[in-house]
Length: 372
Image (cartoon, rainbow, N blue to C red; front, side, top):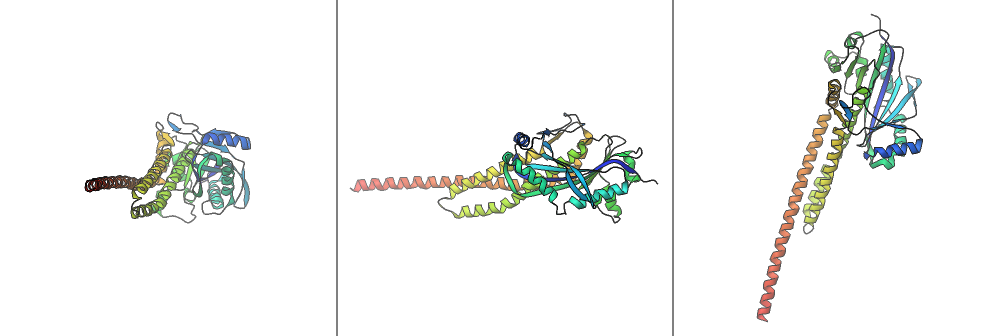
């Protein structure tokens, strides 16, 4: 059988960083224009009606200078863009075109890109992009993060083959496994089946296959809606991971503060109240930002994109991380309530003691006046 040739395609590497508590997007647009004289756009899905799928707060997209990458010993220019999300995430995208390649060479090229700038490779490319963004963006950031969490994702896109192909036929015509898995050795039948399980087609001539860290997209109409949705799902995962780790750090500290506060005697009510306020603030902040992340994309009428979006969230285990964050928030809320009750009880006890003392003093004074 003649091997299919990718007439027009691209490999897109995504790298996302959680850089701040939040980003003032309007200020970011102004800063970018003042600093570099460039233009920004507010992201929307290209081909989908806004009432069907829309960003609650459209992120700001910035076109950066092209980046030179060494891929399999060849230096190539990648189109670089950055997308800023209100809840503090910046998503970088490096897009390398790949045209007139037989499928096996295209698949090998995607793996070479991953080997050059993937998650397990020490590279200055992402660091350089991040430094440039943070340099101009600092005044627009609220509480910048010092320790950065990150997520990555690799997407291989084919826009045109050397002959007409139906999307559902592709898994039988080309070997998607090396691209989706990054493995060159043959996989077991079960692993093979699992990698191809999440497949989607809307028209006869398109196909989307999703995995945990990679995706294959055949899209003749060259729209980027699926790519954008996969980026959003990764941004949500990253934001929830950040707060999951934040709460992991806060819970032991909270237990220690509670124990220390309980050891205090006279100052206990005030310290209980202060600690309760801090915990209440923490709960409010985490809840606000996680809700913004959860609601970043509203999918209502586009069933096809909704299925892809929900599958991506499931594959990325966003719901599991979200549940972990909710459990930890529940612990903090319960602790806050207990501290508040304890502070109120301690204040009540102090008032009772004060009343008793006043009564005793009054009795003593009355006795002294009587004996005098």
